[in-house]
Length: 259
Image (tube, rainbow, N blue to C red):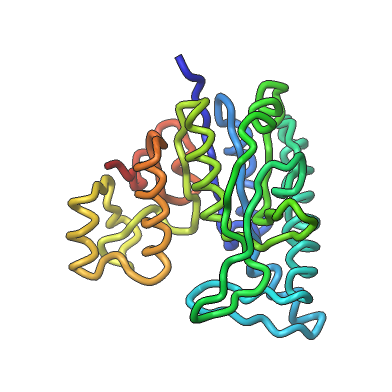
């Protein structure tokens, strides 16, 4: 029987707020079983870019990553954000190890081909090194991945954190019974964006199409749910969306995505 593995991705709004991040990391540390944390840090990177006089260009929710932007992302994601998270997890008695995709050759990617838009040094994932990640988990270490991958030829690549979490969940599912959590500021997918309690508790492919037609799912939630169904169709057992309280043992107010 496969061991259970939880993969949790946190959004930039949590990382930006020190008090919220502290609460989240306490809950994460208390989560039983094997676990992996994935984070981005786009808002923090944008702030540092402004301080350094580097313009941030974002098209369709995706950051254009030129050389200067990649340097900033590497500093912020792989350094400041990642190491602060790891240090706080250690304070919560969770023995964490901070990683980019280049570390231990854990996540390889290729530079996204130029079509209508040249995204620069943005990576699409090819391969997850499940053996090395499993070795870390078996050594009682909790991997904390930032949203940086590499191409195997010395080039770092900026990769969407939702996609990193999704691909980790898909490829680790060969070894573990995997649940993927997308943790953000809302309690889940909302029927009414103005009503925090209007959470759609269960979404399958049929209800997804209905919610799309009704305009309930739009904008930034679209790619997130596309990632969800892609993961479910590739052996991820279950996906949950909501704020950090979904990690609490008795909480039921979040969205579960199933096939």
